[in-house]
Amino acid sequence: MSTISIQTPMTFRGSALAAGRSKTATRLRLTARGRRVVLALAAAPIAAGIAFSALAGGSALASGEHAVPVSFATVSVLPGDTLWSIAVEAAPGVDPREVIADIKRLNNLSSGMIQVGAEIAIPTRYAG
Image (cartoon, rainbow, N blue to C red):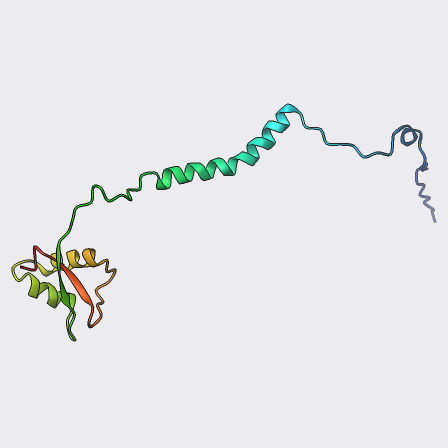
């Protein structure tokens, strides 16, 4: 039978290199290029936010200066009324789909659902 011997290298706790160094912690030093990189990384989200707000909301028109005035008449919704029946009654000679589209646009309706007793605005060109 053979034997194997394992030897570990000898280490000294107080080596000559460690004795020459001071025990203070080293400070992180940034070069000019490193400072520019850190500054660019910090400024990137701010620049992106400014660019997004300028592109997304820069052309909003809130004054109403160029808005076209709309005149309208109102109709009270009775039980059993639908937008189709109101459109046919308001403009008998016009395609009801066009009248319904104008009524929905004027009243800011997302669907054709209307409530009994609600006041629905109808453009005056149909409410003659």
